[in-house]
Length: 331
Image (tube, rainbow, N blue to C red; front, side, top):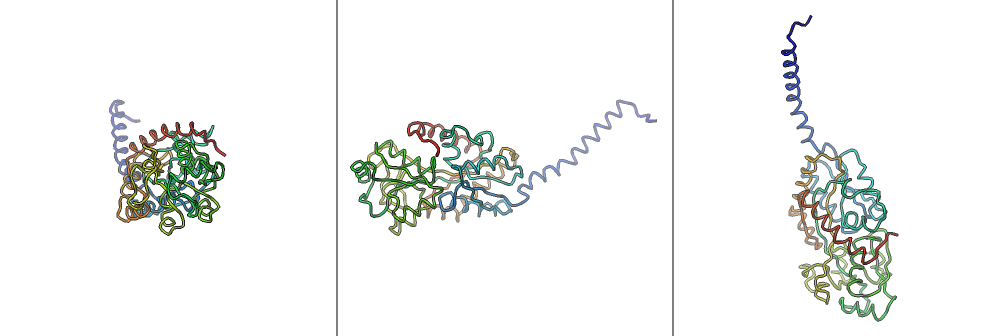
């Protein structure tokens, strides 16, 4: 028979439970600190060949060193980024992250009647990686040396010009529709499945114009295969000092840049999110990354999860208005 007085017995049980919990804490801490415990899949919701590819692979290379685990990029295009976003939102392995983008986070919520993911509830913002200037390009044999001449040509030849984009609702689509709206011109939109296929036709002369993120096209501008008639930045780019901004060419206040950041599924513990955010911010500011970004006219960012969340919210309000005015709808 147990002769231990009941109060003392309860006290012993409580002490035993506290001791067990305290002994377990180091194990829990080690488990949390061990993230990532295996390779991290970094999903890019677009086809290879665009600005997203350059930003993602540059970041992944440095992240692998910062996290002590391999970070590999996997392209998963389709549905204006919705296919990849849906898959990652449902990922349960806690080692899958995704490249967030102006389209999937700030545009798709307003052009699709129903999304297969919730950009706020299904993801945790991790860090803003980079801003990519949008460049306005034409085929070299088009009789327009700058934006003013291009707009004048478009107005004299209504319906004759076309432009390509990486897809309906993509950053390039938004950039051109924004320009069309402020300049009151009509240019036919030809959507593609990714920047790579679009650039193929632009370089072949089957498209007249496009707006593309700087990293994907700088080499073609420098070799004369494409002509840059304007930049969407507020100031001229150091890499293209001879190219005036859209604002300089008659449209004060005009600004258009793409942006990319890292998102994690909502089930990733906050401690892991914070660790990943610090690694992202460090990775994009490494000398090798900034050198690569500078060469492509991309602007390294790096932010905390809270800062990235506020940035996304601001961009959502901005592009909600543009989408409504341009009446952009999915294919």
